[in-house]
Image 1 (cartoon, one colour):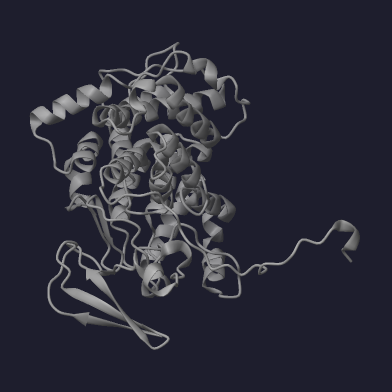
Image 2 (cartoon, helix red, strand yellow):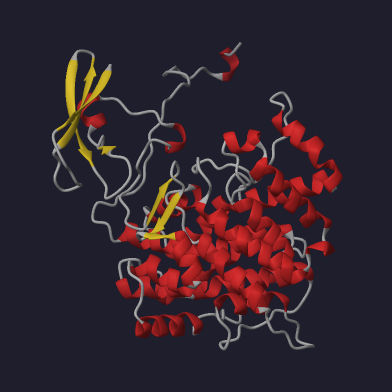
Length: 444
């Protein structure tokens, strides 16, 4: 078997001027090659099974383009992340989260009038149905906030029947706005429930991030005004986590949506996928590592262990599966992290002192620099969220709040794609071949 490329000039998804040739058992097959606006070319093997009777084998789909998308682009080798073509650092430094939401949903940055209209629509949807307050009491008080999120977000379809018809563009629009608006409220309610405090209603006079902090940390018996530095950091965290191409949770949302499930069910499925420690729990793992180190004095010993290939210990929050260069989000998160630590006082928390020392070593030590094991966004976000006052059980919940707009944008793109059909991955079957049933009395 061999595969060769026959490149005949520029190509696009509508103008197939490239092709790849597959030779199998002496027969030759030709498949079109498509070229995106940026990034690797893709070989269209959608007719492979029909033509050859074979499937491809790609565990984890790491070499498979599962869809065509115009939303987010990542170049891991160069350390590039683009939302609709805009570099993530420019959006984080110059814009705000709801502007990024508009961009991801509609494809362009909004005009002033469009931004005001969008902000008003989101703000007017931040409250949840009052009956949902009682829904929370069905969970044990010590339930993990992510378990509550999966249940409550899935239950939204039982409360908002006027936005579950995915064939209606207006209902899809309402569902998108509702999800972006209500997710912070639901997340804050999950947090309040877990610590035994009363729910705090949203305030329409606050911006998105400040309102979220208010709902999490305000109490009815006294006034609370979010610190502008902390609110700005929270807003940046939301921007940096808003979308990240076809990751596990986004692919889960698309796969669930391909069956024509309602949008609330699809987002709930995405939250469940995000809950996994290999995906959304990385910042929590990084913070647990810092707690394990325990003291600044112990750092050299742990760094030595990290360099020992025979030692199972690994530095969490360093390096990235996709980014082989410095994670572009980490640069912004690093600045936010230092600003927050200064605002709250790093000396108050020994864990944060360890983080600062470990960061300095990793950025200067040849071992880490040569292997491009730079601190990633999970390292800085975990420290920042800890400094903001959130327990580790809430870290992935905050990730879900930020990623909701990416999930919704990807879901809408999939629904509106004329080539979309229900997802159905294949398999390499290695079980028993067909065999006859043997009655129990004749089995050895």
